[in-house]
Image 1 (cartoon, one colour):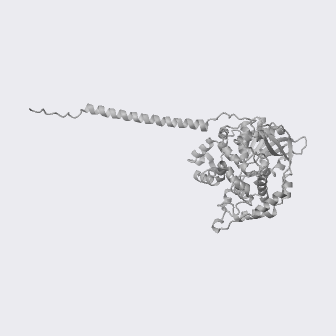
Image 2 (cartoon, one colour):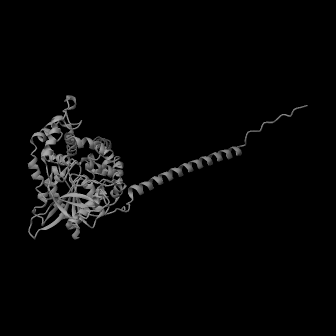
Length: 484
């Protein structure tokens, strides 16, 4: 039987090859189109998220203006405003001396004491501690703290403390109420050298101020809440209600540090009641401002102009903020943990507070042995340490950081422009710098800024005369603006 030869198929024709090539090209185009579509979709979604969460102005969040923060649900019927006095009792002084005697001094290590980069220098702190231990004039300081009238009153369930100073002027001088808001680790005492300037007639101005300086809830003599959620937004409401109770529907505000945040919230929430906002911590904390700062690292001069060195290089600034924000991370996460240490040791409390005075006054101070502790009056710093110690309020004061970081409302309010006329005082060594145009995203009615060639974060302590003078200047500008 003869087998038939099986013929192999001849090679594909040229036409067939073109069909295959066309099919491959068509498939490649489809893949490219699909990939491009996915990329465009992802970019579009990213841009949408940036717009919604960063650029777009959100609506004002719903806030309860009468939220109860007291220790119980029964609302107090006490609506009085009661006189109050600062007291340093003898038993407190004796207790302090016993704790001083038990202070364990650490051995000096020469390699670690060339400057203050490891923290407060042992020699500088030794001098400060010796003054506190042997020379602090308790009775004189109590008299000094009581030189102005103090009061307490219940606001939303909390017993709030405040200093209230009315000027003594004739009927031809206008009197405007102003709320001065402190930060951390400051107290109402920070404004003691500012108050007499604000309440005294000044050449070139036909007005003075009636000054109200509250202690923030949980700070010094103001009662702390036992509930969660008391963030700067809620404190802004409490202080507005305090001003209403005192009798002022409209008023000016000055604040720095946390006082800047709270004052800014008050201006945002109550623009018809806040006549003007003066800040010595001029910063726009919004996500948009941070995004612009990030993008600006490509060409710093486009963002900051001649002051680019105050914002860039970004790597150096981030490294600095990371190094010096350790306290903030601790207080924003575990305030009660560090609170046990600071509540139990007056020496530990002093060192912790002095470290902030050192770095925030001028970051270069940590490169010296003195650490800049001679930059602010030691008696002023001791007064603040004493106030936190005798009231045992450092833990509740630090909790404000945790409440602030946990609050979504804080992020929302930071993105809402504040229509209230605003004025900024920039001190040379302030922690942050933002140009005016960047501030205007948050404060579109920023009428002006004043720059000082000295001073740092604690304007009221470091430059009280300059701060007070700038408040007069700002308020005159606010009044002129409102006449238009």
